[in-house]
Length: 226
Image 1 (cartoon, rainbow, N blue to C red):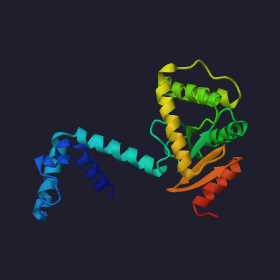
Image 2: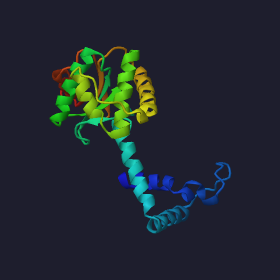
Image 3: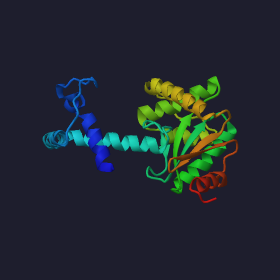
């Protein structure tokens, strides 16, 4: 299955192959392929990969990225800040407003679980006020501009102001918040704190008070452990 997926991705990654090598892509004009035709196509693909191995590297990167995103049900953008082991069996997508006291409490709980290696946390900033938008924009801007989201988060969860802002990441921050609002609406998130606990392609939404026990209970339910 993996080899097939990689070959498909490699096919898509190769401009010549993806474009049909000059063939007319109209379905009405495509001939029926014989077994020999299919074998010839595979041989051609293998030869292209041998002569241009970077196609395979690009295909592997695409496949792994798609696998990561599918594993988190499309809720974990590749450019979102994260905490915890990248290969954790459980991903928790956190929707957070740092001006919200219960959100800060939930954030400390999730950070503790991530530090213990139990979960990977994907941080999605969902500010609910103008002041919160500025806080989130600063934190996300720091993430994009200097990889300092964790530093901002630690300060904000403790109720302290974050370090100096990084203006160069503002456009990224605003786009990230727009995506987060869309994803939260898709999930029906109407109150904060909220988190999507994801395990083996299954998801449970937690809203309101989030504790270590509520997260672990959700993980067990998703694993069919009662």
